[in-house]
Amino acid sequence: MSSKRKITVAYGDGIGPEIMKATLSILEAAGAAIETDVIEIGEQVYLRGISAGIEPRAWDSLRETKVFLKSPITTPQGGGFKSLNVTTRKTLGLYANVRPCKAYSPYIRTHFPKTDLVIIRENEEDLYAGIEHRQTDEVYQCLKLITRPGSEKIVRYAFEYARKYNRKKVTCMTKDNIMKLADGLFHKVFNEVAKEYPEIEADHKIIDIGTALIADRPEMFDVIVTLNLYGDIISDVAAQVTGSVGLGGSSNVGEQVAMFEAIHGSAPDIAGMDIANPSGLLNGAIMMLVHIGQPEVAEKISNAWMKTLEDGIHTGDIYHEGNSKKKVGTQEFAQAVIERLGQKPQTMSPASFAKGGEESSGVMKLTKRESAKKELIGVDVFIDWKEDQRDPNIIGDRLRQVNADGLKLRLITNRGVKVYPDGMKETFCSDHWRVRFFNADESTITHLQTIEVLRQVKELGFDFIKMEHLYTFNGERGFSLAQGE
Image: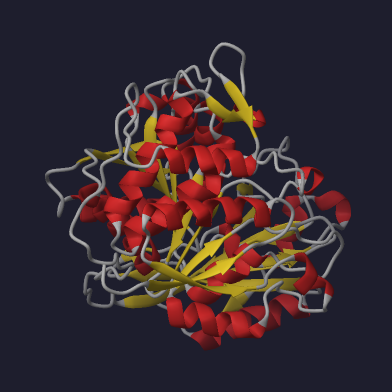
């Protein structure tokens, strides 16, 4: 290649500097056409009073190179320190987390030797938006935010990934049997996008049975796409069942910038001992090489790495009598990989990445849609109340007095269960009540009516916490019904 691709590199903390040194030595020996711009992140930056753990100059480097090869870092204990990974993902819009989980049996012990799956996790939305409130003495709220553009972007990325890497199936995992609107949107978008990729099989699993199947029959999966929280959990489950938690690399891809790293932490207890396994970061670097259009180099390194495993040259974390022939340290392992560049594994399938020489893009073209007709037809008012033995009939009978130009009480729920009218006496009630108001015929209402509802609720002596407007979109209800409604 005539020119070198500039990338941003961070050596991190703990074992980070050791495994980065080993990884870069392999990349250099393999002929990777890269040059590095080194930035400082992690513990020492935190301790200088920078709460995000990254120097301001580092953002300029990332904006320039758009590629970040990152070693693990140590976040100091105590309050006031932000997660660097979360900050980086959100600041740079890294919406897709890609986690390959592959078995390297019999060299890495696993009960599932045929496992070769990739989990693609939405990275910016869901409960990880981090929007929480304490609303009453007893009740805390965490908002789950799912957007159509965010869902389409990650789903389309999953299908594009499957096409590029010659994968045959994409499985969507949600909990839309319970969260029919939020998770339901993700599933609906998945079904829409899947039609554009007829050559790729598409299916759906409810997340609980899907997780169980990953733990019991992971070989049945190819590419999995899912929401943020679910993806966080099943990524670790899949890595664990393959026996390769310490070997896994991952990427975080955005429209402009992509970050590549190991999935493990900084392991400060073994820092400086030259015993850490550099394989996780190396596999992240292999993903990086494919991303920047150097798949041939990526193949050469991946094959040499697998040949090293086959030859029984193992670091202490994966060393087992019988499977292993020689226990080596971090740099000696890297040297063993370098010595095998140009060789291919004999038992495991050789690596093969899509050719073409073009840098990957995280830009996904989104479907143009007309805005739906949005109409306000009701309101939920949330109230903090725990007087009179929390009797739903007492709060309900008092709130029946509210009448805002025809906008009247329809029902009351507690923790999502209908408790008034005609609730069950066995239902436990907290101090957090949702009070739903509609016109008798559920016709459209005005904002002035909702304000009048709040005024009357306050005059009756109740402390309202918040209000949610109830809308229809093109005549379709945009809110959930209560249990028992």
